[in-house]
Image 1 (cartoon, helix red, strand yellow):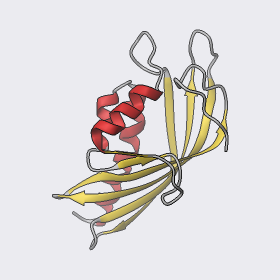
Image 2 (cartoon, rainbow, N blue to C red):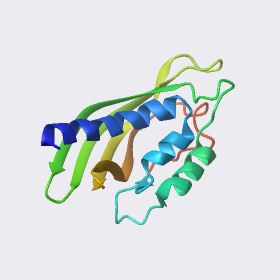
Image 3 (spheres, one colour):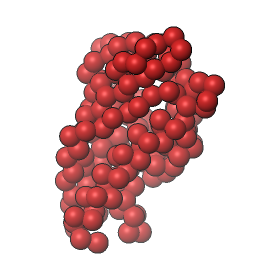
Image 4 (cartoon, rainbow, N blue to C red):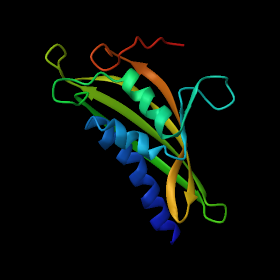
Length: 154
């Protein structure tokens, strides 16, 4: 696969995450991490890591408030995606920014959280998969209608 196609496939994974979480497709989100993990703090900082499809599914089931229509009523907008591929090693990395918007019966349309994703990927049997997603939070708004827990600022 030419490097441009690799970059496109990797960017598609970044955007698939946003599409699936906004649809309330927690199984689909978890599938993206079949061979990977999610962290909420940088690697090596001692924070928790949710590894593999089942752990990622439990993470989202325990954290994401799904509303009557089965979705979180959010729109995850991922921008500034920078893709770096090491074709020989079969690995890649991205850095991107995210903003999550939400509107519910109790909350007017507004951004509720902004931050950055630092992702790594691995190619397995010719297909790209998430290896590690680190979620970094920069700005926090009203998450009361999105999360099932209170997000504490560091």
